[in-house]
Length: 207
Image 1 (cartoon, rainbow, N blue to C red):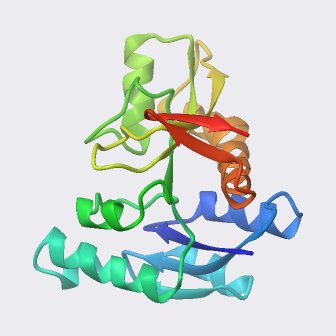
Image 2: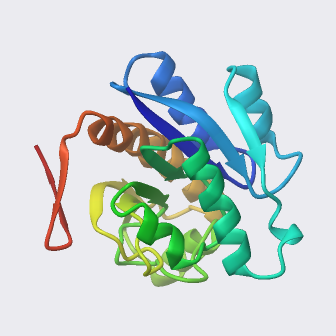
Image 3: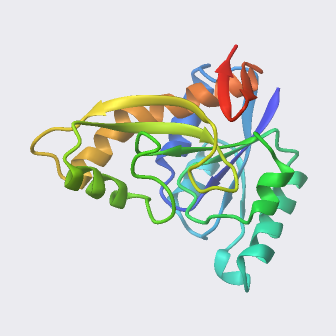
């Protein structure tokens, strides 16, 4: 049974999707053992508590720079004996020292079809605003391994979502979450925990 540590910064909707998948048996051979938040008092921590999952708060503002903060997060991850680390709305880009310590053991869900609308500055509603500005007919979500390059790691799973003519960034965000993010992330986590993901030449192969 693999230990899953989830990193959060806010409401924790993707965390809830993981919890629901765990409790319904969708996630095989893995369990969420700890939730780490970059902010105190966020609703994601309440979600964890309701389901008996332990949590830690490591406030970003308590650290003078990103390297010292990243080291603190890495120390917590290692103390929790994490086999897999999942970014679920975690709003801090950690220093590469974390990725180097956990190669192909950290994954993130991004609310677009990478390589579109991704990279530094593309998060939250901003992603959907840009998609609507460009007039794309399809958007979606991507689960990928985390590397030193923001949103640049090997792609694990993707799912397309239709863009409607009357969409607002908010309605599009909701549809992408419901139709893609909340389905893809638990599936990718389960594939990892079942040892079914293999990375070769920056590509992910599902066994």
